[in-house]
Image (cartoon, rainbow, N blue to C red; front, side, top):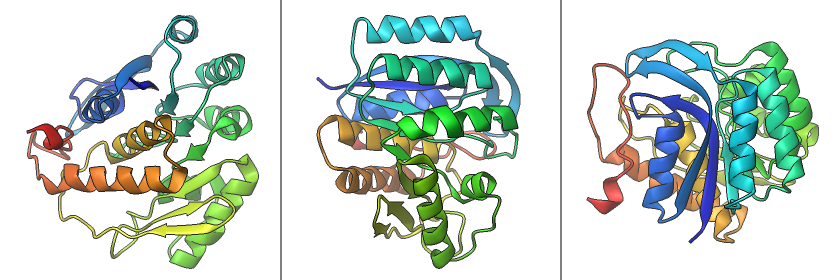
Length: 259
């Protein structure tokens, strides 16, 4: 059985973060493990508060996992401060991590900042260059590059700039543009992934879910393009199921394949 480690924050309402990752990994018939970086109080209406885990606990969680059950792939989500970003990067180098996918969680769906400028700098310098794939959405890419992205051409330019900056492949998610939800992979070449937009306002945790599903594909030895293709098909299914929970931006139906 393939083993996947998610390094991320906890979402008590189950829609995003560690909980979404573990559901995704389980549905893909793989063994999920977690390093919790923060505990959030949130629900479908938004994030109320964030408690950052002590860096020593994060470090010890990583040691316990890598010294016993070596992951076949690692997904990183919420990194709440620069100390945690540094220790995560250090441990990933120490343990020769394979198949690292990073979803740079900078801002919550409700607009709450989840990463400081100092943390972003450490991620850019130490963490992102370790990744096989980084998966920013358009607002995150705009923040990283300090530029506006409004067209497919600008998406191509942005993805190429991020690739040259970090050395990793970039999956630039185009869901914030008008029209269909087309994503762009740049790994030295441009690869567009076309997806019809699903009319579903309940889309909390889409980034977590997509990046975890990609990591599952990579763990099985599937190449990057096909891992993304399969992950996007799974994400489309979670949205198309039209789960409706909560009073705000509700969660995806991660378990739709096993109903």
